[in-house]
Length: 517
Image (spheres, one colour):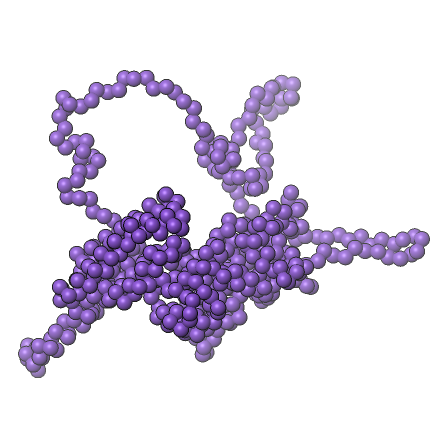
C-alpha cells in the first residue's frame, strides 16, 4: 500500500490524533534542544515600545545643528576622589591586586645591580616602590611536631612527661585544621576525596584514601547532634520552605546505584537543613516535618498538598516561580497568551520589589499587598478562567496545561496575601540547593545511604554558616574542639546562628592558627 493510500485510509479522528502527537513530540524535541544548546535562563527581556526612541535616537532624531547647545565653557571646581583600594584595605599597586590583612605576605627585596661595588656611604635611600604578585605554594599542608621532653627529678628519681595535646579524633594523626579543611574542600568547594588524596601525594604525604573517608565520616558523626539541634530550630519556624532534590546513594544492583533524595528545609531565621531519605514518598514529608505548625511554602508536588490536608495547623502556600515556569515553557505554542500571563506575574514581583525598597513590615506589607497585589492576582485568575471559555484550546496545549496548573492551585498561590512573611516563591531555598547540584557534578554519588546522610549533615552546617555570615572554617575548628566537653542540653548553642552570638568573638583556634599569629 502506497503512502497516499495509507493517508486516504485514515479516518479524520486518526489524522487529528497524529497531528496532535506530532506537535507534542516537536515541542519535546525543542525542549531537549534548548536544554542542550539553548539558553536556560527564564529571564524575560522586554522589547522597547515601537514608538519609543532609544537614547541614541533621541540625540539624533529631528535634530537641527543650529539648535545644538553650545559647548560648555564653565570651569568646574576640582575635587579629590578616595582611592578605590581604601575601602578594602588593600595597598595601591599598578598591578591592581587587592587583598585584605588575612593574606600572608612574603617580603622579597630586589637588589639594585647599578649599585654593585658601592657601600652604603656612597648612596642614599630616598624612597621605595612596591610591586605585588599573587603566588601559590604546591601544597598548604603542614606537619606539626610536638616535642615533649622527658624529665627526671633528681630528688625522687621519678620521670615526668607532659601528655600530647588532645586530638578531635582519638588515636588519629589528623589535626582539627585538617578535618575542617577536608570538609570544606569536599562540600564547599566540591573537591572529591580522591582529588584531595592526589594533592596530598603531590605534597609528599602518604595516606590511604580510605583514611580520608574514615576521617570525614567520623567528623560528620561528631557534628550530628548539632545538625539535629539545627533541624529542631528550623521546625519551630512560622514560615518554612521545603523542596526535594535527587542524589545517587547506595547500591541497587550490581553496577547500579539507587536514587535517594535530600529534602531541604529553610526556616525563617535563615537556617537550612538537608535531611536525607531513600524515597520521594509522602511518608517522608510527614516524618521530616513532624509536629510543624505554620505556613509551608513548596512547589506543586502533590505530596505536600496531601500532607497539609491530613494535618491540622499547617497552611499551604505555593511558589509563583514554578507557576511562571510553565507559562515560559508554553511560549512557543501561544506567545500572545503567555506574554499576557507573564505581565501579570511580573507586576506582582514589581510590587514585592517596591515593598523591599520601602522596607515595609508586617501590617504595612499586608496593607500594600491588599491594595496593590491583590487586584493583580484577581485579574490574573479571572483572565485565565475567561481564556478557557473564550478560546478553543486542546488539553494537550502547553498553555492550557500551564493555566490549569495555576487555576488548580489558586488558593495556595493566594496565601502570600494573608501572611506578611510568606514569600512569593522558593527561590531562596533553590539557591541553597545549588551546592548539592554542583557536588553531584563533582563527587557524583555516595557509596552508601549513611554517606548521603553525612553529606546532608555537613552541607546543612556550611550553608547555615554562609547564611549567618560565619566563616565555616573558623566555625568547624571551634565546634570540633568544643563539642566533646560542651553540655548536651546546650548543644543548640553550637548551631551557626547561636554560635555567632555566644562564641564567635573568641573562638577556639588550632595549634597551626596560633603559630601563624
